[in-house]
Length: 207
Image 1 (cartoon, one colour):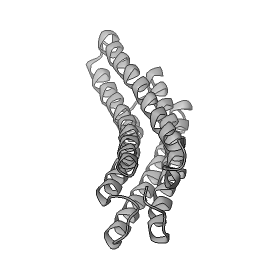
Image 2 (image 1 turned 90 degrees about the vertical axis):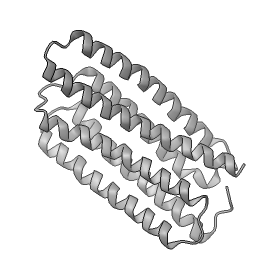
Image 3 (image 1 turned 60 degrees about the vertical axis):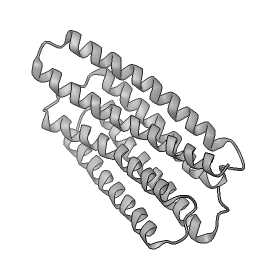
Image 4 (image 1 turned 90 degrees about the horizontal axis):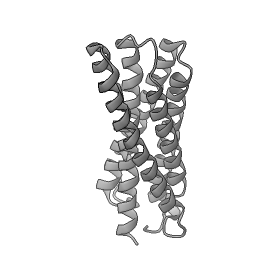
């Protein structure tokens, strides 16, 4: 990683702040899935936090457009920001669809997938806190490995959940609903891995 100067440090701080906002959104979503009650208010809270994350992404991209000096390639900062935003977009989509689809009871697999998402975004938060020192210690690399492990476990769970859904669900409407919900949860977890993979590529560029 190129040495951290004042202007470059701005992007590290913005990304770290973004990761913290994603954790907050994830916590509200996790609470919704864990305690499936007061649904409309919790979904509204997820939407509020998703909007805050959109604003943070816009803030980063505005700074990127106005800056000549960046800590690493502009394309990578853009890609990281987009993938981080996609994490929250996907879980907000799930939360919203709970209401739209009139979901009265959650399947246990949705809780398990939400747990993986929560674990992954917490690892990303740690990763971004230590990103400026990525060349000095192994913390960032360890977080990347952990996010990849969580995503791999999530893939297994996702495939098993779909298999169970298509084998056991007799109501075609319920099948369509839950296929969409599982896909969005998987998309959120994929975005977590994408963020980690882009950061890994950045580290390799400046090794």
